[in-house]
Image (cartoon, rainbow over all chains, first blue to last red; front, side):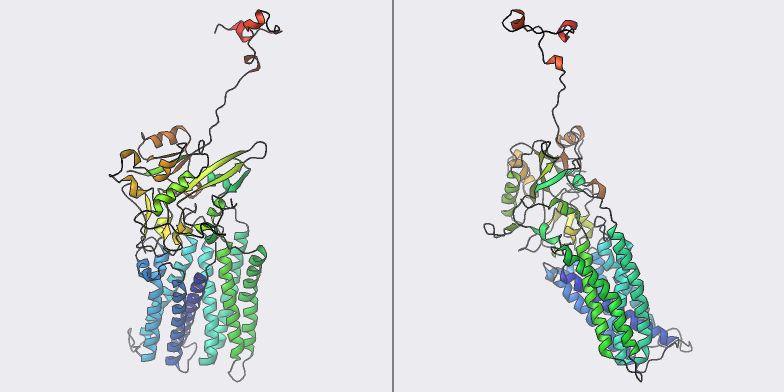
Length: 331
Length: 243
């Protein structure tokens, strides 16, 4: 498939936004049971939510460049019964709304104890909204992943690993950003966030490499034989029916050399995992008097995000569409 | 239930592209808007078409044959492009099974084209909506046309009658009989899309001739001495059969 930068930025940016929200709520639930304490929770959660909302809006903005008629985008919520894309179109604004409300409630202090004031769990209403937000965040990851995983003849995508990788890579980058954010706002959370980032990134490494191995061994079910229905081992296309290009020759081929394709694969394998983790580790080790080297942590996030852009490029480029069987020879 | 479809007979298609040009002419001239082209006479031409004729070479020289292969939307009975459409612009008509795109609802997200294994959908680069074969839905029901012209433009244009049009759910229709009796098949059956369009395979006309059938043992010219006599030691078919 031809990787579209609009979709690459949509999926990576909302991944960071969702992951950042999950990180904020992780901190709140830890704080609620007394694992950690946050000095200025009002500012920490509200600014964090604003940043998360910023990533989600940036992703939504990028997605409009994918559309031929962005002014009709509102129509795309219509077919949520059958279309994962439609479900994503609904889940994304819901996610934005919940992140906004979550941040606003923290900022305004709208946080009554809805279960009971005598309950030791404090901040119950925002916890409740946070749980809702967590459900929506995972739903959005599921929708985004299923857009690709549900197309059964794109065999590189048609696997639960697609959804799992969207969840893990998005969450990893969100926690990475949360580590950087905490270094500014709540340095005592940096170790907790950094540890989670390392754990999630390592799990993502396993599932992403698993997907790579699976796709390297894939046996494509369609062939020239099934495409034109002729039972012969020696079929060669002599003409695709046109001398110039068409939508079919542009949309389904990545159009780059095998060397570039491999370069992208190794780029993301290095940038997302070892490079980002080493920088994160150095950032975590840089603590002096409760202060961290934010430049190192920012670099770790930037390197991982750049790697995720390469990862998403590779994800699209790797998928071999069966229609390509019909478009092999100019003539 | 009616399911209109095309039957394409690969045995008689000569690859002349008449169906391609007549399709383009009809469908770029209709009320639904043009099928845009860029640089049609330039160095890098590109354009939107509903129908393409491709050519494949089967086998190795000298045992080769060329198969011309017209390809357009197959109007699948279980079309994978329809459920993925987020707006409902892509739909399959209840009354005749034609898969259509509502150009006024399409947002141009291209997701349906990803979900079509046949590459039957092409995005119009100027109207920015997805386009595909309509089975000439604006012609086949047009009562101002003579009845024999209420067929898709490609079918009318085909000089060898390689394209047939009809209801594949009616067991007695011409197209159903062709599919049944001449080995009609579907493309990429492995994906369960159940295409309504069918293709008829190459069918070779072959007779088996034995060597002694090539010799006319009782050739009167030989008996009369005009031609040298044939020396045949074994009895021939003429000796042992009474025709």
